[in-house]
Length: 309
Image 1: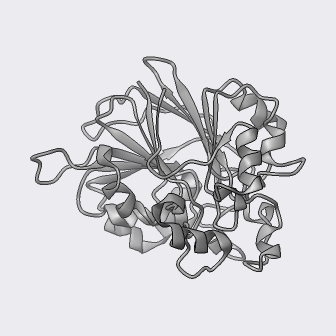
Image 2: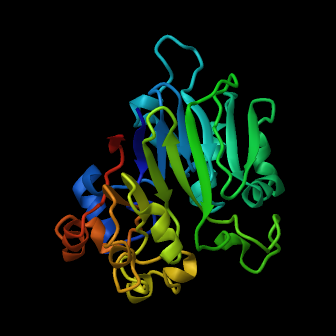
């Protein structure tokens, strides 16, 4: 049985963002936990005992403490059910949480060689002792079975695939440690429980919904998809930044080329937006944008949402 827990549904900075007074952040501060979102990550498990994370957000410590499934088992002095972390990109909101996992428990970090090269180039990640924390390269369109800390099979299959995107913003204008050519900076994942055949897709960063991507996810039972912005220029219009969503590697929810319209003709059992920015009005339950998204069959999840396939 495949279990998935949304640890965080927000984009970089979360909601409310520490230095932001936009409508979404103000509403989150005024209305308590209902509107708050930590930065995007999910956990999944095939047996309910061993869990794998997709990305490690800067909010990871808070997320783990808020998720009983990921607590140390009762009576253990030191223990974690987390067997590994699979990185889909090298943005700060995907890798910074690794630094909160430095207390000596064994697990494996899986990532494309371009992402692992970025970790290797920054000595702060050396706090993850290689004796306990292995770094395992993964290849595009090369399925693999993540292992448990003792080397046993997990019974899960992970298929990484390239999606339109870009390298981390902090590398703009700099030499990429993993080389400038080729895909690998932005991945989607297909996660399958090998015993049941149940699967889900995780695509938390995507600059364009291509026909090839549509064909890949058509018929899926569950898809987590990039929901960073409602419209491409919303951060510019709101005075919150000078970049469009697409220039940051994120497709908008709305518009003819947006995720809602482009994926409307697919047969997907459950569609969930993830990595939702504080500027996105779809975060607000009473907004017309939320009603439009939900009317099109999309869910805006709360942190802690659990799904069983």
